[in-house]
Length: 186
Image 1 (cartoon, rainbow, N blue to C red):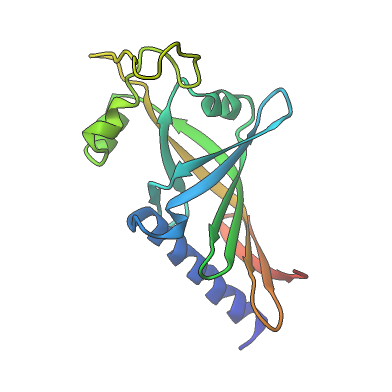
Image 2 (image 1 turned 45 degrees about the horizontal axis):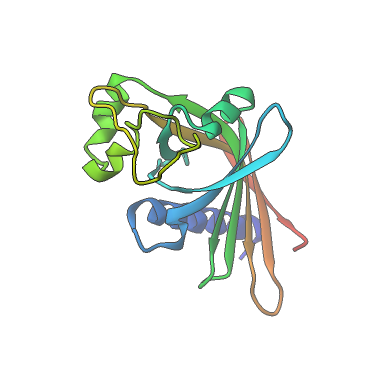
């Protein structure tokens, strides 16, 4: 197989793995690490649930509009995403642009796919990360909802497969809506 054919196949495989992460609850890519850098220039990382992967590789997750990650994305919308599958020894690292989507139409579109118990988390009276006296006493709003969707549009993806005899590392870059891959020294 020629190098370009190999990178094309690897890209197809990684895309399928990402899609499985958004649809199969037991898939290791269901949960990922999102890294943001706000105005304070500190990297902030947190684990999130992958909700959707489009054919164009837009990655979506849900969050509370008042969360720190939203503040950081507003300050700097370039984000990093990290997936790891320990069974396959496969790491996918993504750099992209985050877009915040909020509004009634989005709530109605996505709310049906979010269990009611999970929806409740977007209706707390206080923003996520606010100090509490007693974690058993959280006030919920009845008519207010802070649900939003964040979509990440990748522009760079690194694939790293730990294997014998040699590890395999490929960087994919998106230019003018086309992805191209190149092998890297692991």
